[in-house]
Length: 442
Image 1 (spheres, rainbow, N blue to C red):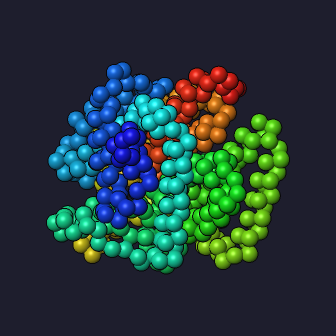
Image 2: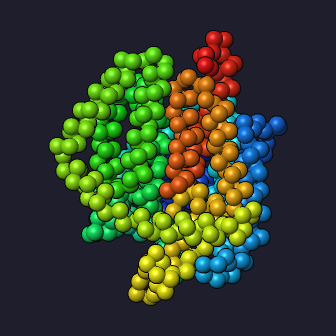
Image 3: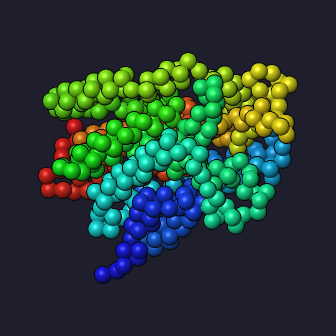
């Protein structure tokens, strides 16, 4: 018998289960690129390589991402001028993210049940959810916790202090921001940004429910319920209004899905638990945090400004876009306001940074954005009839990115989770159909 580290499927476990370790080492998101290499080597030995439904759309999207780099030297009206070489780092990062996530999708989809079972992958995704919750708890109660990672120590100081690089290699528990009118912590561990934390939490929620509440019993189920209650604390303190809305959509989806399958008792129990949770929430200090966030929609003006700037710039190159994001001239207050040495955040916001859709429009144009959306829509349509628990959780992860693309960027970990989920749906669809008495797909 081969050692576990040599068996097919090991890179997936190393990525999901050991992610907190990679984060502490300063590798975090970068580990996705590294572990994609052994996955690619495995795929290179397969003949033929199976492809999921709609992969042609995704392949066209990747081609469009590459083709859009021909526009890097151009600066649309309303943006700061710059050279193509100045933009190569962000382009290489984005391209690497798309390609690495694609490799993971094909790798998982081409593994057999013996090499990496669906149940094992569901458990790994559920464990990742637990790690995200723990990171959120740490970020809520130990907001100033941070340390210099080993990778960070190896980098030149000028590189390590770059804001983008720092978000990748410097482990910190939370982002300290003045969202409420005063400095408040927003949990982000084990990621660089709070929005990434919230995005990943909701994408992983369905897999956690399957692994800890549906396909288990006894102490593990009780532990799962406790973890969900604990998750509510960083969810509130994250101040992520988009996450709050997404979790509401998840609850509605779960209720509708159970009702359609005649599980009315489960729906009643779910709403009872929800009612109890709401009463407990209203009696807790968390109510004040939510109200304060709703009373301080500080980011609305910035989002409106960058969205308008994105649409104006995208209209100049609607087919290919400009290959990457651009820095806007001025700010939401005035065209004359810009960054200074004393105020790096006073102006010139990055257009395309406030949501995956806006990133695609400025970087790959309307055609590239349409191909990206079409792949998710095609995947959701392909697996819409899967009545299994994997089908329920996976279909939700096909749809949530279509909501999040208006407010959060998907690169790299959220995109990775969504493509892993599609790979699980794809595997489940093939193996379920091959069973002697498959679950009806109606």
